[in-house]
Image 1 (cartoon, rainbow, N blue to C red):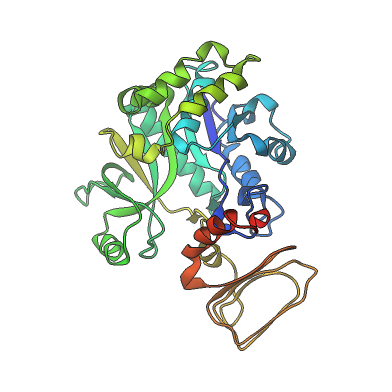
Image 2: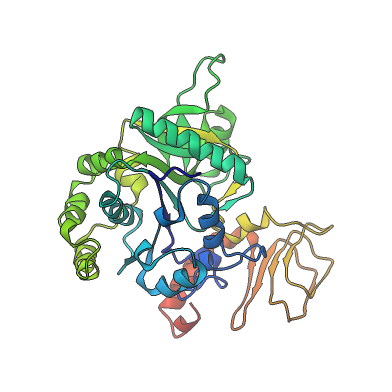
Length: 363
């Protein structure tokens, strides 16, 4: 039985521009069945957390335009569990908003914060890692994050360096030394070689008193804005007050605003088949390949003399590839994208350029 003092904040407001053209402003990737499992990434994330806390303790923080999508996909939750952001202000403000909502119900809550669009292949191992983090957060009142054992020198992830201990110390809970944002390839290789760097999963665990104290210390202006409208939470005035707060609130990540500055941070070393599914390349690594290492999502795809491609096409369309290697091919109802895999980081810029052009309707 999940602990009624446990709460979960699922962040589901991103656009996922690096997953264009499948992910669009009106219907981002977290609402898609990316892996063909019959569930969207949001639905998988919600189901995963039902083993950790009661469904009524799971809050979805999302952009106001996705309210109906969330309620449509998660029939188990009430409207009061969907926290609507009037504009995008990165992760710290959305967490602050949810913190103060939870404080109205359970001042001593333990909280898990996670993005809606991550892949977890080993659910039971994931739950065990979260339970370890919850225990550490409760006992120490430290801020806890989950680190993922790196399998390659990936330049798309942040890294966490942890303090090493004598070989006799077997605990997978370590004290954090440093956070490093996405490094260059040479530095990433050094991180892997050293053995004391793990990927930053962006999944956080803490008690409500500990995170509120951290906001007051490191992001006092943000905390004051959300604390200042405390009397309006769960009233008819909440939406209008939140709109005022977001109109002046700083846009800042929880990583930069708090985690990289705090001196009481632990990491739980984990390995539960994780990916942030941030790019087509990351999806490619988790899909079954054919004999030529092509990852194919689509029922009518003919591939000849082609290898190492990431292909996603509509089920009812026949697509033939001849002599194509190391490409991303994505076909939707109104957009066809063909892009070298090595250039996938440019997709985000393509989306930005399209927004500023006459083709903005395709974004």
